[in-house]
Image 1 (cartoon, helix red, strand yellow):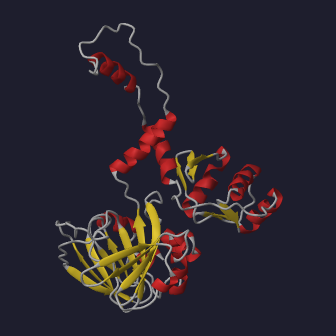
Image 2 (cartoon, one colour):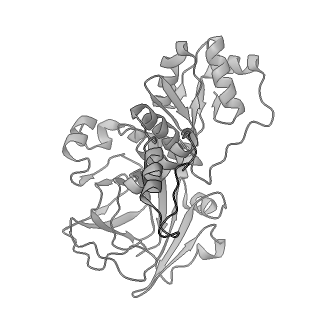
Image 3 (spheres, one colour):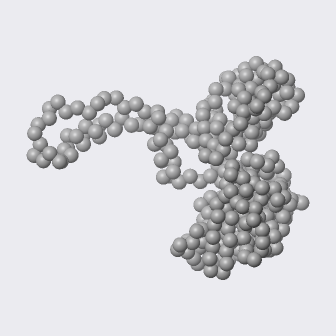
Length: 370
């Protein structure tokens, strides 16, 4: 697929010339593509309490947003333009998960999810910009995109969406099924459905420094143990009993100076943080798990694949699965690295150590044989 996905560019060429630099329009990135699910299937997901969705309606002067689960009655009619956006479709539709991982030429640690939107004629979310990179792949129907690299990012006050107050597009195209538009962060864009259409958005994680700081401080809180107890045996009567004295400040500053971290801890934090499932994601162990022997036989015949909800990353010889360090036998590092990269292992006669590792993950609902 990569021969057409990037318009004939190699991943190295795309990353060097376009990634986080400038937009790229790719006609027939996936020839013949019309989508990985029908609109009725998307509506079913939007109505589920386990799926994140938004229903956006607008008139000439007003916008409204309804967060899911959506009502079936609201996913009908065309009096006012509307669109429904469903996050994490890759978690529920195997073909959507395979589509998402067609973009693994970007590190999986940066990959977020596949959002699919359906819109009636004239539907959209208004001119806006994102803080992250996005590939906009057209499925069913057509969408008119206008984009611009503008410095003015002021927003309409009081709107329930982040809609640009002054949108100044400089380029526009109509995307047909299989066409794709790449946009770097902060590029203003507006997509409006031409007739009914579905668009597949491949988004990437771009945590802010503040977000990472908050998460890392939480990580340190669980990792650190500061010794000592505040003490002041040489205390003398203060001039002001309400004053926080210099001696107290100095002693506490010395105690807190023992809060330190190194690159190893940062790597461990990232492994845990980047594989942490989103709050609405839950794993279901098999109701009647296979025996270890039957499991090994199925892996030998059909391999092993990660559940779409599972996140497996590694750093050197350290592996992380769904927010926790993973205990991987040293002799199986290469096999588990392959599983992390490709999200599946081919049919193999697994060693006892590998079979045990994979079987434990299977029993937790993290993957399945075959």
